[in-house]
Image 1 (spheres, rainbow, N blue to C red):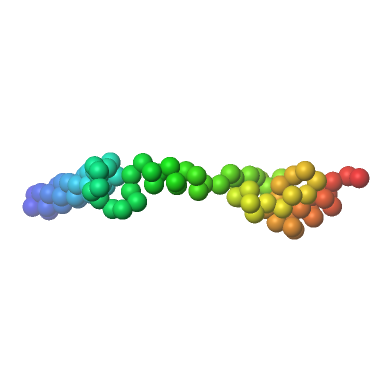
Image 2: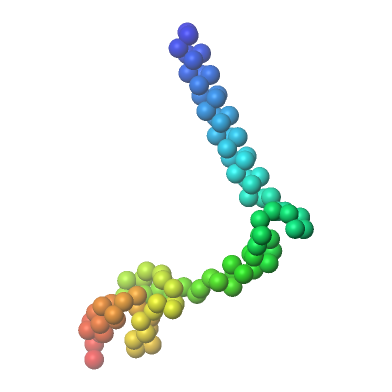
Length: 95
């Protein structure tokens, strides 16, 4: 009986600890400083800068993996992730 009570108490403590950590993580994410408070560079202006920094993704015509469009190898009107895939696709296409 003592072991059963021990395990029940342990499970309750673990559940409470996990809930506390999750609650703290959610409140930290939703916190938005007012005015000049908080970290410099935080807030809506910084969020819009992050959006502008994102890059368009494209998929390789050979293997289908997604990668940044700036790293694409353009061959025959298609995008490839590497020169090797561009050559493999060109070799497998009928003339």
